[in-house]
Image (cartoon, rainbow, N blue to C red; front, top):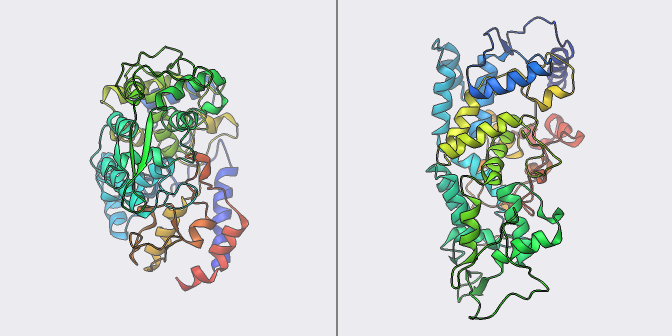
Length: 455
């Protein structure tokens, strides 16, 4: 029975996609509501599609939108009651109202903390070695920042400039959660995480100039097991950087930096990075959010921003950058803009077979659920729970029986299911660590595994 249902699903999906342009609207998946370019996002996307002579997909049906919004915004399926209420609602503004409700749900903080913990390498065990106490503190701080909608510039500045105990001053774990504490390695991590660029491909002198901002970070142990203090360790007066290893400190755009004696260079760099006129900072942030919600970045891949990898829609990217700065770095306002756009609400059934359609967001891309979201969905629909374990069974690693996978605080806490479905190891902070590609092993597990059968 399970095999036949799976075959029917594949047949329906393949038929909907293969018919292409000129086909009849499918009311199960698509809506007859007209497309418009009222929002600035849609104006830029649809104008680009018109210039390319690409027809956008129909809008998604209410049922498709409901499921999509729940999974994309809070990583959780709607309940049967929530689905019935939404589908019965005749208010034309019900989609916008649903988006507002989802953005305030506690699961929003759980799900997006999970995404940020991937980038910030929140992991207790090797090779990150935060240890459970610090990993728990780091995750708690990240989730609280998202729950409180902390401005993104303040969130990043805290990560870059904090000092103190990695158990009690959680943002300092940004510097602990790196495989190397050498200044060039720190500079590479900062560039990847907050500028979306791979500094290891820069000219050596450019990377070395940026590394100077992170050459006065000190680390020292305390009497408490596994605790470490991260702090600004100024050089003695008159001691300069070794010229052979560190050229004059300069920002990534080549502007020389003037470092006052006794001032933490990390603060100087953070002030430059989060300045409204800095093109890297806001661009990287909105491109990541767009990628998370629509399956690919306006610049793709989202952590490979470089001059020879241009955006597919420069006007759209520039608009979102401006909106983030104008909102005082309120990321939730960017989520709201994107989610309310017709571009986001398009059907997943394309009306063209042209390859450029995907890169220009002519339809919503079908993609596999994140491992954690899929695990939670299985448990929710079957009324069961999942067992998660840690390789470091210390007192700080308590995992309740009803723990949702999207709220796991530590990348070391896992299960065989999460491993099979591509949960990232959180070793590098690269988006590509999360593997959402379909495999035969995953299909066989869903069809025949005793794990699923017991559920």
